[in-house]
Picture 1 (cartoon, helix red, strand yellow):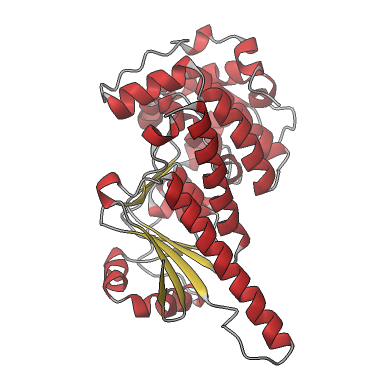
Picture 2 (cartoon, rainbow, N blue to C red):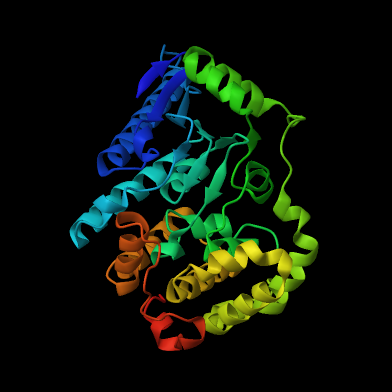
Length: 358
């Protein structure tokens, strides 16, 4: 954490690990945001009483070191060390996400790889910038788990049922998609991000100016996903049912909805990238993910409640053979071929999913 003109800068600084979050990083960020929040409250109180104090509008900028990405997520090796380590890490990580969400002065700058825990720290902020290099995803189903860090809240706010699609497949989206789907608010050209990295005293002023500008940057990238909604929306409705139905198929029978989604994606040549990504996912994790996003879409819960549910469900998944197989094959040995306990979607049973339900 460093003090800069107009506020505080917190830089995720593990570029060799794509700024993957550790326990100590989560604790330090939560503490820094809490301290800045306390200082702002004290300054507001001082202003109300006519006393001198710090600037209550001082910004807290969170960015990532290096050109490869903002944050690739949590350091899974640390998370998987033991059940106790998993619970300790998640507690610290979710406290950080909540602290970021509760402080409107937080500004995040996301570029390159932004996944999992990076979405948590980056996308719950009051002002969220992305550059054209962004590749944002919640790919947890590919390691045998479910999107957490409040990801279901973000995914459930997307138009049509794009959140369900992105959640089960883990497909990465671009800056244009992130802006259109509600994961970000403002576009920042990559060349400007690099300039501000080298001139941090300009950081708060430039970001604040751009955030207040009512006219979007003319170079702002467009959303490919929104352009594809013309054919994607009927496909998703056919597979999952009407998104406005409070007792939708994905809520009541997620295993059936997942089978139908898999079938529709395979049959549509334009959906090849989604079909390929879904084929890499744990069927169990994908079904539970589909259900959780659909439930959140129909009965929205605040971030604090979503994080509490994330903690419960992630801890359950951390003990499953799928999670162990996914982490080993994708992140440790990197063979890329996890052997899921239930290998095919059509083999999923309702009772397997039921144990993860509230």
